[in-house]
Image (cartoon, rainbow, N blue to C red; front, side, top):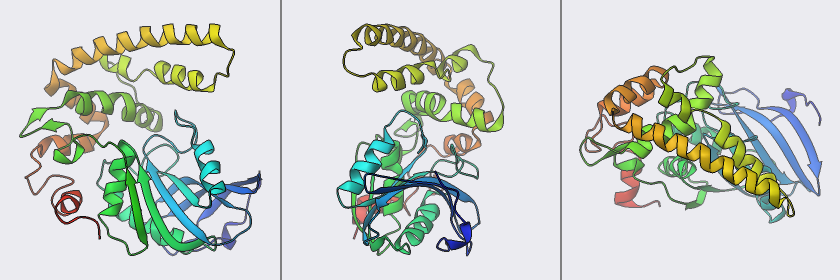
Length: 302
């Protein structure tokens, strides 16, 4: 691990240099943990993997609200595998999440941040100027938002399931609550990181159960177990079943009082209140709206 002089790094969109915080080289692949300044000087954190030979190659961008370092997904393994296959890859924490600065607001800053990230990436010596965007689920949403920019350097996208996010986040049709997204995903996947960042806490018992990191820790342990750990694997499965049952009960409780739950979540996540105020995707004030991903659906990505 090496601390690098930030003055030697390529200038970012804000006119300030990106800061490489850590760098290691393993099996011919350079792994860097770095912070890239956006146009408003907010720094977004991420992991970059590229070949140690320094040859310019196409690069992939994956933007996540779940944490580039740590979390449930083995992103280091993905990074090394991608670099060995002949691509560079940047896995970036979206604004206001995990190691990135700023305030998290679903979809509100993603297009501008994605554009600035592409601009920074194609200026790197290990980039040949061709960019691919990729992601699944919430990462697929950030991919669509980045694709909506139609940046000329973006040559390909690969997107997995993004649910009904772009029909009006958390809602079916005109104002019918989609509780698994509006309540479940927000409380279970987004709120815990925000509570950690702000030092605040929740008091509602059901909401507290959904933000309990215990089930995520169990999933992480399950993924780390090697072959032969069958006894521990069964113990983890049993504990996961118990945790999932408790969270299901909490979810049903919260879904049964959606207005109160939305207010509880909105107290910690103001962007959710803005979404709830414009739950019809035809509303021009909808956060995503016709100028971004809906435009992709109508015109396609060129």
